[in-house]
Amino acid sequence: MIHQFIFAVPRPGWVAERFQNYWLRQHAILYAAKIRQIRQYLIAPRVRVAGTINEAPAFEGVAEIWLRNEREQMESLLSDEFLQGARRDEPNWAAFWQTFVHESRSEVSWGKPAEADEFFKVYLFLKRRNGTGLEAFRQALRTTVTDLAHGLPALARRTLAPARDDFYGFGEPRFDALDVLAFASQRTYQAALASATWTEYVTALSSLVEPQCLFGYTGRDHWIIRPGER
Image 1 (spheres, one colour):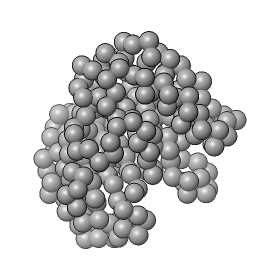
Image 2 (cartoon, rainbow, N blue to C red; image 1 turned 180 degrees about the horizontal axis):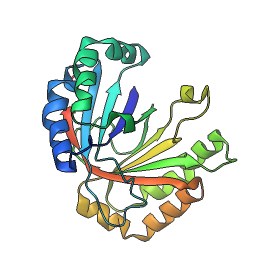
Image 3 (cartoon, rainbow, N blue to C red; image 1 turned 180 degrees about the vertical axis):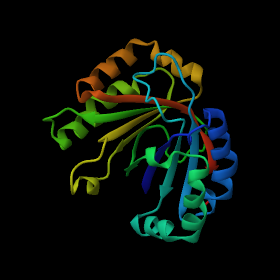
Image 4 (cartoon, helix red, strand yellow; image 1 turned 60 degrees about the vertical axis):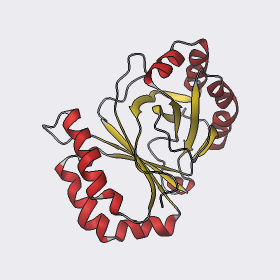
């Protein structure tokens, strides 16, 4: 499946709480969820946690959307529900020109991919170091970094989301991968932050990425369309 991550910023003049409430209670229900091709859909409003590495400054929410394939993705973008609904509503609540979209065929390396639990997550934005080959970078994420991630206390799920290969046909995407770590609660995430394994994990990541291109975002899941509902 295609796994989209859509990080969004409040429209000018809107505080984070108003933006998050509108996204969850208005836009997601009245517009986005009506796009029939969307198979799964959750929103994780931002929850700031001290100690998170290089917090991405502007985003106040992220949507995760799963679509079956490229054909259904195109159908969704051409649908009335998108063009006359979700797209038309977006300027009402979001600074759409600052939206960041990352697309992947993500890999769950820890936990069950179909679980409908609502986790507390940290999303880490990764851009490989200049001069590092893409395949070497991906291999390191899947081996050394994965081993360290799996050792984090109370880790519930780990999803590695490398950018889709076709995003490299002309230039490169802004980030080469997202590393998404899920925990049962903010408390268990903070316990992981305090562990020696977390330090080792971040050190391993830092050796692979451009120092100015490693960011973190933390939020709590809210399912809109749960696994198995469509």
